[in-house]
Length: 538
Image (cartoon, rainbow, N blue to C red; front, side):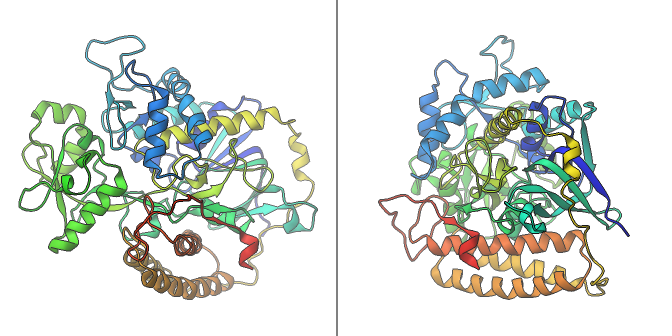
């Protein structure tokens, strides 16, 4: 059977804030395909609670936001990128408001300074815009509703990218990206998407850990595909663990927003005593890495399954008005947060490293861009400051769109030349042992949690490395002999990213930001990025 083929000017792999912003910013004479593994809004953007950081208040300043970001990043942020991002924040907010995003406002206020701003860990001012406690959902739905009406934009649901196609893969000169092979999850067929510009907006890789706040789509697909295509990756040892996820057997990784701590919620032990002041003078408002390590320390010290986050001292109406979704979700599990503390644990939340790009989102491969959590821009350094992620998505999506539009627009007819080979699965069979995939998946996520988690050691990392190598062999053999499905594609990518995370962590002989190792507890004087180059790995 022949491989179905699609021809577009722009192929966007991922339908979160980054991908949809880029599509929205392009002029309407571009034919655009947006791929989503699930429904278009079933991604990390939709579940982002806290907000988006921007300098809007008269008592705040660009310099303050820049310095806060640099401080949170523990010396590894690229200053020019931080400045570029922060200075574009008002422009992004204005664009979102014009698109119809309804950010919360102060009661009775109007005009430029009418937004209700909250304060989160690492920020020295209130500068986080939000839509109650469901900011990501508001942004995602607004962008999707607008794009769904664009005649030049086509959404492909239940499609997962398998691998990128480059010129030198088919015997041509150069390594420009020509498109991607994509698995149609409904039909089980692999289809070919050709495009002049391919954008990886696939999100992070937190699904590599046993406990994560992310939805099931966060399996590091873009990072793994880019690595196989020859792109450098950087700083993948810096995995942010959100300090406060709801601890309940049926909750399945429900995030408790940092905004609660911004509004006065206190972290307490099972006996009700506070503890954060023992670890940092900023207490509950310390950056996430410090808070997560403190919680991890106390849980190990006491042997308890969780600690608690208590905002019950605030008026009931305030809590219900500001955090309606968290209130409702906790209530489903019998927890009234207006009266009782919330049981919480840390969970993998954000991938601070990723595919190396320039300021326009361009990767090492011509015609291939990476934006959002899948990219490494230099903004986050060794630790992402709260609510800078949505801002990064939109700033660099806009920059990538601008970069695409200044290039000569090729005729779409040119996409048919050269001819890309059809997907060949004639030498493989249907698997009768998919249980192997689930076993490998569970093994991977457990040893990554135990050995490459919040606190690390050389011995733990070497153990993880040996197990990753065994899994790589098993998954490669499985991939070579059986027809692929969505679970196998994700497992293959997760094993690749796990290996990159472990190798990056082994190379960092210090404790900095989110990477904390008992063998090297001090921070080195010189801050260096950990850059991995595919050509150095045979």
